[in-house]
Image (tube, rainbow, N blue to C red):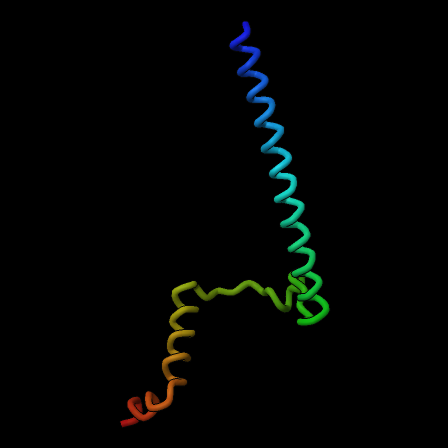
Length: 85
């Protein structure tokens, strides 16, 4: 009986410790998100719920990365001369 009581007390202690630690982490994360939302809304004029900003896209990740790479490579000086024949 003593072993079960000790195991229960140990589990209860660590469960409470995890809950307190998770609560602190979650509260800190919520605070950071609120600060980020404030900066986005008031400095960058960005609203994550605006459908005109976050419209659904049909491009895949591969196509998006391909377009980004193509734009980046063609903007390097000297590469434009190689593509002209």
